[in-house]
Amino acid sequence: MSCPIKSEDPPAPQSPKCYGITGPISEDLPEEADLIQTKELVQSLTSYDVFEDNLELRHREEVLKRLEALYKEWLKEVCNVPEAVTAKVGGKIFPFGSYHLGVHSKGADIDALCVGPGFIERKDFFTSFFEKLKAQKEVKDLRAIEEAFVPVIKMSFDGIEIDLVFAKLAQRSVPDNIDLLNENLLTNIDKFCIRSLNGYRVTEEILRLVPNIYNFRLALRAIKMWAKRRNIYSNMLGFLGGVSWAILVAETVRCTRMRQRPPW
Image 1 (cartoon, rainbow, N blue to C red):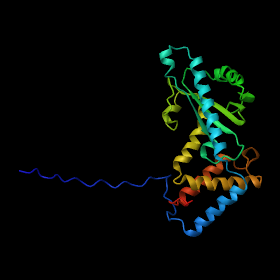
Image 2 (cartoon, helix red, strand yellow):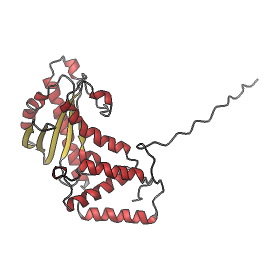
Image 3 (cartoon, helix red, strand yellow):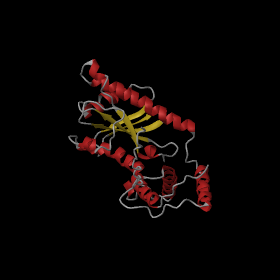
Image 4 (cartoon, rainbow, N blue to C red):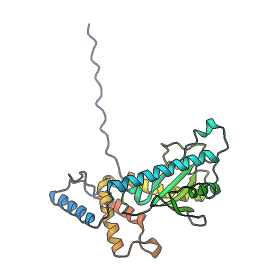
């Protein structure tokens, strides 16, 4: 006697991912004229030399890797715990700002967040880690600005300008796969750590809420160049700054979502 075939319910249709609290104005695919204009925009931006070549991009990546290796090495040096525990301390450097958004221009600096475990003191970051950086031959123009609204270490590392901020979390270790958008990580930390975390959290949130990263980056590069050439790109002078422009462009891209990347 054969076994009866069990009928299975069809899988429930998956609802499309929601970006933001309202739906897009349009999800139409780009027309040929749109693709031609986008290609012309890329050519125009290229003529203004706003894109870094692959060699320059790899150099930035290598600088961040070397800097993170130094940071992790320092964390192990300053923690007074058994060696078995030291190996699990972790620590990580997160780039943020225009570099993390993928819209940095040639010669632009890199904003980076150093995240450490809760037993690290902020003063250690601005003293012993500062001295460790000072001893590196690649480091030039090193200076610490502890009294800033967001305390920062500024330097040039192998020709790349770097702004380093620091935040410690209320936990014993910092794994590589930590998600800094987790709201629970903001508990039991001081205002300076929250401010330092804010830069990365904002840029990462923007990237996660944009449905088409390629369109967003291209549009933001064009808007930034337009604003800078008209001297209206500066929050210090009362105009919109980088994050403000990024938020506006992200919302525009979200509302006029085009689902297809130009074919080149």
